[in-house]
Image 1: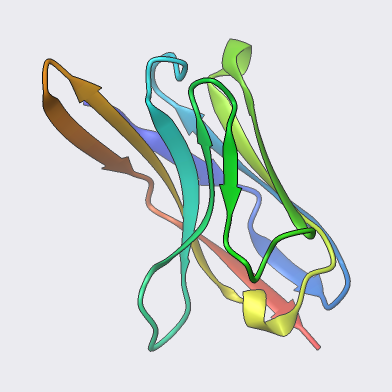
Image 2: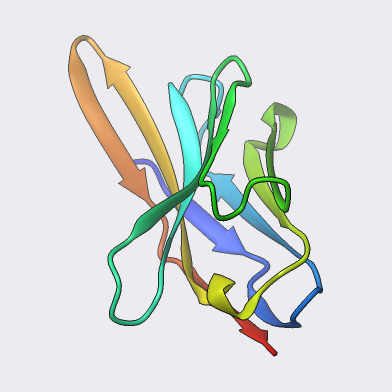
Length: 119
């Protein structure tokens, strides 16, 4: 069973920065993709950013130009660098990993880390 452990959340002021980390319990380059999602109170979980096994990235329009996703395969960790934070970025952030093995698709999720941005 794959475990994903997020860290780095907390309280930040608007305009500030935070970096989230997601440590996986196994080597990450075998995942087809990893990513970050977030869920604000009363809202559905939404995509923030993804990175594929070959390094292609994708971002939600709301975070383009402010957030960066990158991976360190040696540390089996994916990061989300968040700059120019806004109060609307407040949410629980979840790390995810996706793989297809032998035609079987699997999704894995972390427990989430709270990010709160004050105005």
